[in-house]
Length: 313
Length: 266
Image 1 (tube, rainbow over the protein chains, first blue to last red):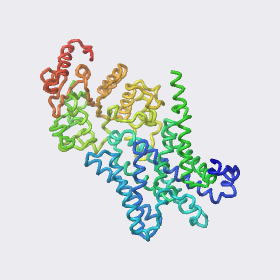
Image 2: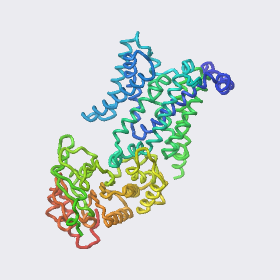
Image 3: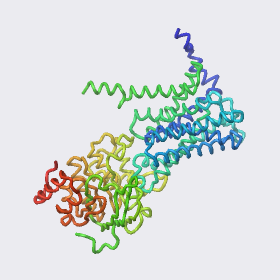
Image 4: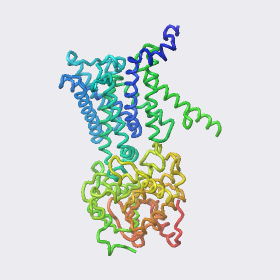
């Protein structure tokens, strides 16, 4: 019975074909998956360090009204209006959370819950009000559709074909995140570790908080079409969570994040091909699989190591 | 050796400082001038505003009134002259950084935006670690340290700041004897190098031995002066109010003052 539910595993079709005869199709999907997971993962590492993982949840949802309003105002789905809408939504979310949390007894996690669900509701409401004008469907908003990436118009630069629109866009987002992490490495580190010290050193933690939230908004909107508002959260948190089980150095965490992103994308495509299912979901599951492996087998803090240490003691 | 007479500008000048938290005043009308080269202990009961005082001096808390000047200037103009040792509990010790990484943070103030610490900074950080006897631990992850070692990492980081005025928030809280000795050695070394140090301290018996001057604080300044003049039963009683257990501790401390070794701690 189970065998009827699960597709038979055809080695050539699942493991070889996506990277050979079907490369023009799955190559772009895997590359997009890598860009999304890597960019999200690098930003997500700082969310985890600041114990603000829930902010990823918040911004990924509250970006929706920003996109809808940007679309209604500009009447286009161009990159620039979408990024401006997302940045504005991200800023509004961050300010709103601070306002609620500072000016009431409501704690920060509850304030996050209020702010993002309210903004997401505004987005849903606007979509249903202007359904005939807004070309955004609810499923795509929630789960994205990475399989459509190869169908997009190709971007060419000086006669050279770069790739599908969203892949190029996400590549640039990853580049921006990578440069940001390299250039502001020490500022991001000290504001996350000890905001008080940072302030006395003349590094304003508020500036870097908003900067990180802006980066988060950009990453989320870049990833939105591919993986949607819900799966993007996994992309933000999983790489850092996995890496932090394997190492205690931030630099190594970043490198492992890139490795995890690559494995996630490649394995996700293969699982998607095998089971003929949503590739975005398959990528998230692949990432979860890596997390579970690290959780069990990590040489320093894995479950097995913990058990053996306990029996040895 | 008080430097009061010849020091034209105080290292720290606090004028009419008032700080409120949720509209309740925590500190009011604080007027203090600390001359350079002094080692000052800030003592007072729980909730007296000791940490609040040093945090507001460093601009970490909004003040409702008054001002603070560091070497005659607002701290914003020259943040580099001030070093900070926060309470150990204020950070997450599972953070993925090494001991050396944390000490290097002390150098960040002198590096421009986007510049990484270089070889000279590394050398300076290592020298600071050596001063607190933690050099062999330089590459350890910070969660693999004892409480006392963590405190010494913070001290080394403050040394790496190469500041002229230091604020330390309860550096002696819950540390082992080795750490206590290391902290005292560093404090004395800093003082002989002409640095000014303000230390929030909770233990009365040792306060008397460690500091040149004491600032007795309980929402306002009860007394500020040379330790031998200020450490009196009357002033301590005024500072601690009717807290009987503490008062007996005070009596013990005063009694134990005769032998220089200091009283045993409960």
